[in-house]
Length: 364
Length: 254
Picture: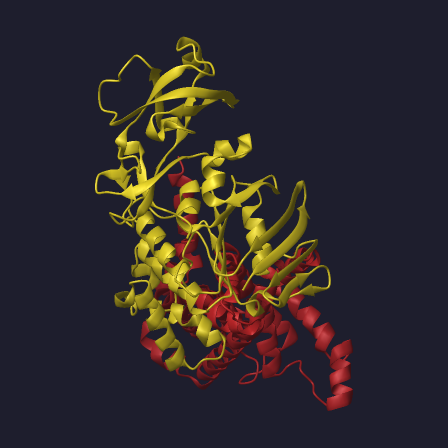
């Protein structure tokens, strides 16, 4: 079901004013720092908060038309997955997952059968009879995903689903979300709230960037993240993305070169992928100097633009060898002065392989 | 430095009990405890305390949920009112009940005229008095637990399609069970020990309203040994309550 939402809400000094469109079968990522209104936005969509003014429709159904109509959360057909799994501690895993079908009137046996099907869908069938207290964070989040999906929601809301997981568990859950969100033929609209551009990259078709309750940028995920139009987006979400084909050691470029990096667990060799690295991890050298030492990836480039970003200066490259075009690098003002950088200066960039992750290519 | 006042405080709690134990006539204990009046009082105490605990749970759980979850401003005032029996001298509570439900009280008069029901000086009055003084214990411990837990689970349950009553039944109440257990034990203990409100509102009629504490008071004038034996019985019941139920509030755990 396609989600259309237009909402205004004020609480004290904070105000939210957002319009969104999420076509059915797609994922929209809402990126923004803490306090930008992401959670408020989800609360309004879930029906837990009432916007002062606005209209929310899901397919043919109107969920909110302020101030008259406000469909209650339990009647919305909305699934919510939060940062914490929030499994009901007094119910077994299978009964947690069976909660939604049971609440909609299915018999105990029916709803447990549905629950077991969803548990095997998220590779957690073996956990069915455990108590939530006996699960690791990653296992609990798997079960929470199954529980949210078992209600067969038309709209799925993900509120920082990976933020509370440790670094070992997060990639696997991200891979799982990728699989279930992108399962062919699903008619769900999904809204993913996150502060991590990597989550958006792995999961979302489109991105909106939120700042102080306003949308400051929106567009296809790859475009917004790799070529942000506003300095704000560049600061919170700016990433270097280079497209190619996954290999065991990194990413093979169309031109034949190789970027060394660490493949994320859900990447498959031979499939389209992107190398991702933050502007802060790019080192800049004079063109004449070949950096010695550990950085595996070096490339010649030309300075395109220099813009201050808070305490750092962000350098953007124009043409260069192979993958060097359109990259960003963050430097201190002192380094900019020392290297005498200005638009047109030839430079050499270096990125440590450990700072590069290879992600499956986003989108369709 | 703190050891001295701490020791004094402990002595203040423990020594009177020791004094009572020392004063007990253990040879006559079985005989004193199984006398007709004592057994009557014990039976009445257990029955009324159980009934008022049940009332506390039935009425107190919804009240605690409303107090903890409501966002309206008047609720803050309400909470103070609910705490009133906790700080009020029980005798005052008993008098208040008498002037509400007594023959001259407006509700009591109404009940008498319309239904021919007279509450004061009946076993019902004992249960009402005990519920009056014991309910705040249950409400306060439940409300604390509800606030501590927040409503995150309830919100998740709602997004999973559970109607408010289903949420209450399948999420709120099960999560509340530990606090409900300790709150109910506290209420039971308070109801069992209730004296002032009972004697004012229900009087001291053997077999009808004379519960164990009233019997202790009654015997203290006639037969001290008997009073001591009954007091010992109340202490044993209190110790059993603490040992068996171990209410978290009594153990100092959050």
